[in-house]
Length: 262
View 1: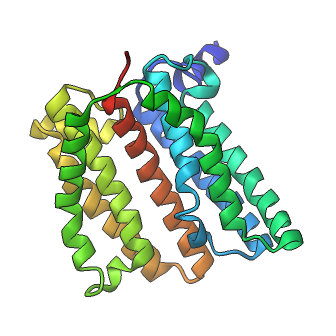
View 2: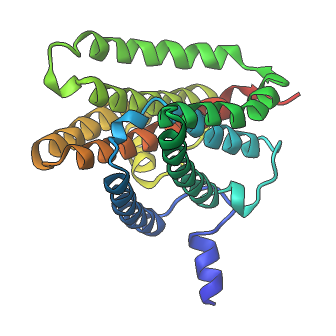
View 3: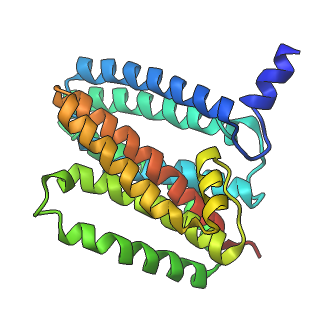
C-alpha cells in the first residue's frame, strides 16, 4: 500500500502534478540546495559562474524529456519525473567536483570542462531532433513572443539595479518558460501540468497570464534574495536554482512543441 502511494505520487510515469507532490518536491529541492551550498563553500566557487556553462547540461536533460514525450526514448522511471531530475542533478554534482579537480591539476577552467561536457553529451539528442521535421511555425511564434516580452527588460537592464546581469538572465529564463506555455496552450491546444498555473489559466481563459505571473513572482523572489540574503554565494546559488527551474521546463516545452516525428 505504501509502495503504491509512493509510486502514484512521486515515481509515476503518467504526466501531471498534484498539490501534495508539488509541496514535497519543493521541500526536497530546498534540502538539495542547502546540500549543494555546502559543496560550493568547500570548493570556494561562485555559483553564478555556472549560469552559462550549465545551459548545455540543462539542454541535455530537457531534450531527453522532449524525446521521451515523442516516444523516441522509452518512458521509464530514469527518464521521467522525478527520475531524470535526480539523474541530471547527481551527474552535474559529480561533474562539478571532477572538473574542480581537473582544474587544479591542469589549469583548465572548470566552467569550460562543464560546458564542453554538456555540449558533447547533447550531440546525440541534437542529431535525433534534426533527424525529424521541425515545426518552424511554432518555433517562430515562440521566438517572436519571447523577444517581444524580453526586449524591454534587456533595454532597461542598465537603468535598474534589479535587472543586473544575473538577475536578468534568471528573469529571461522564466519569460521563455512563460512563452512556451502560452504558445503551446493558446495556439496548439496543449495542456498545463502544474497546479497553480492550471488554476490561473482556467480562471483567465488564456495562458498569457503566465507572463505577469512569472515576471511578478521572479522579480519579487530576486528582490527578497538581494535584500535579505547576506552572503554572495548563497544569493547566487538561489538565483542559479531559480534559473534552472525556469530554463529546464522552457527548453523541454519548446522542443516538445516543435519536434514533428517523421
